[in-house]
Image (cartoon, one colour):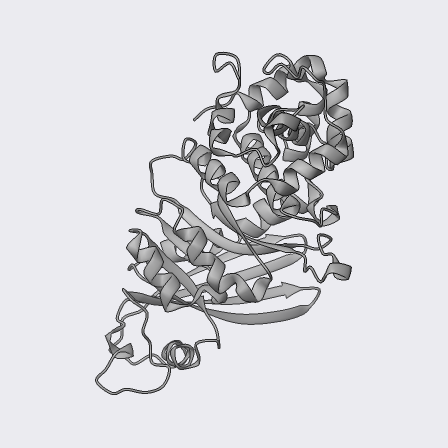
Length: 377
């Protein structure tokens, strides 16, 4: 590849090993990667569409790489993608994302998503479940780790965190992440944690729940309230934090006592939602390794759910992820990474029209598509 004309991001694919026998390669791996990315940006959602787009847009692709043998068939694309080492591909992705990240610390949300149609029941294969890290302020996918199912997120989350730059960041995870090993991994990488707390940590949950239900008069609490109203719904969120956590640790030993390293704060969010004449109430509890003021705590808790609205929902609606039928080899995981590449590029693009329309514009306007793939930090 000519580094003077090729998109800079393709240089990050240099670590990828071509899984094919060199003597039989008609379509070089850099060409395949460029085709996958450009076609996905331009609206192609499967290998048939990617191959068709490539044949229609071959002159565009040849601006960057030779494509001497034209465009591979959809079967060839499928074979190559399912054979690429996903660990190397994830490493390429993370090295590229680091060039986009701002130096200021960010809120990093970690959560899992299942691609429902990637199962192969006849072969005993469950759907792909991918744990992703999301930079809330920059709206960037930072990395991903595939697991066999949601119940295995506990083992996947540390693997993902160990590959990320966490210095100064606040990492938020739902109750599945309330594990001492995960908390320690975040601290070891110079970040802080904000973890949801549920009955999976019964002793800690009971102690924190009891504090906010009947706080001692000598315990200082910070409080704030926020109200949102839209689509016929009124939601009131009451936030409370307590920076005094010494009472959680004592000389007495008991099963399930709090053992979270660096614990500095506990918090609660009480949500009251009015819709259609009915009111629903919910309380959620959190543990944190840094003493956030109550307003910052409220923004962090709210920000965590951006991974649902701005990543998972976008993948399903804009990239039709729930309709993807890749089921063999590493295909589902590797194409999920391609979509993360595409999403990050679209997020950084101007003007700020909807992601759906940015993708359509990439399909209609070659100059816009070229601008997308040439983006740098």
